[in-house]
Length: 355
Ligand code: AFP
Image (cartoon, rainbow, N blue to C red):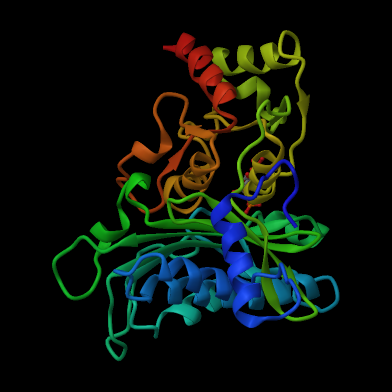
């Protein structure tokens, strides 16, 4: 199950052995996400089960969204819903669907103080008819949506925070927390297979959906970015003329002195997933038309930064670590440099020449 690039640590081996012993069954290495989460919860006697339950609910939403994504080429679901999201981008039907699925999977659980979605302008309170809880979920229900109608990988991104405001129900303040305060973050990749990858601050774990049984199966325990990393950069180079001098020099350097190759999908989840498994450098720099960058701090950059850091990599806005940035607005954008630590450090150094 685990490739040599992602060696299995003893805790996982022990868990598998324990499972086989107690059941006195033939050795099985199949660990479902449910079993994994319950085992993780047992290792924390203080845990209430709320967090485990939240991840279950998100995994269920992922399966429902994944089912529709897989059907998208077959049914007449593709096409604009006829309106634009808060960023002025065309909203497609699957975005609307995914947004509703995430909301409905989480609104009634009694575990959340509030939510925020990339598709909604303001934060989402929990309806009064439902109990409220201590957690806050922030999500991008379907990232990379311009790739939907060409059958290219897309993803869902989520992060979980603890409520910090004093009232019973959540407020905007609960959503505007820096990445360093995340208690968990993850993404779902709807690719050639559907994968759920998450961290709760103790390493990164990846699960692959087995569609025949409808279960996410642990496939990438304790995922670490490879050392040495692949020399691959990922950026939309069509914007070259609109980049700063430092950014232009950085990419020229990677091509010539660095001897890098290049891969760019245009779906953050897919581009970062590749870099997690192989190493490399993802860049979405500031440019003339997007002087703050394009990607959203809360919905895209901070959750992916938590995962990449937990896998041994780094994420920066070209100056400071993404995880340290205090958000000022729900839909704040930042430039993003993410991937193998040595390459992100190099980007920071070369961009410093712009100052
Ligand atoms: P869409 O959801 O509009 O396809 O945008 C995807 C995205 O937010 C992110 O997933 C990509 O990394 C990035 O934008 C691609 O942007 P460019 O098309 O400008 O390269």
